[in-house]
Picture 1: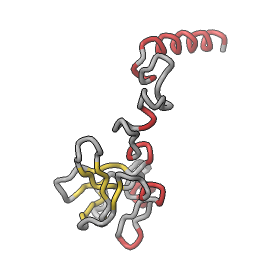
Picture 2: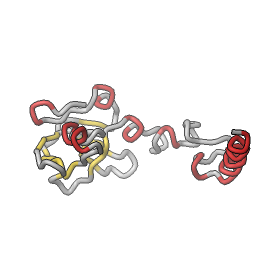
Picture 3: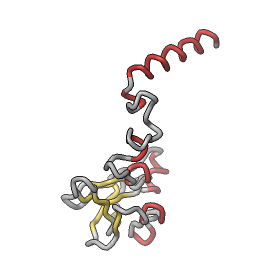
Picture 4: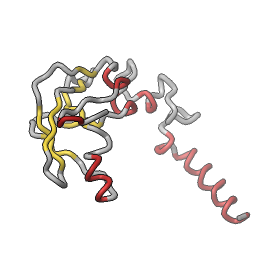
Length: 138
């Protein structure tokens, strides 16, 4: 995405997603660090709840992020919550779940036990024991 001319526009890939639209009233978003104001007309609507979110750049305000060495988040001048504009965050499967986390769609974060990898106690035990063996060898 870009923020050229003080106006935010997500990447073409994000703009093409079915739950993203850009024909809304402008909303101001301000850099938390330098207070520079940008505007956005871009929204993401959750397909299950209908809750609308303001799309914001995942990089934060680039200039301040570079200067500070960490992401400078946005302050949104709206009652609507913000949504970071990454594909993984905005592209939901037909089950209304992030594609990588859907067990029905066999997302990349789903283990062989049909659980999210970071929540599977079986995978955690296996990974921990194999990691311990590597450390002993190394």
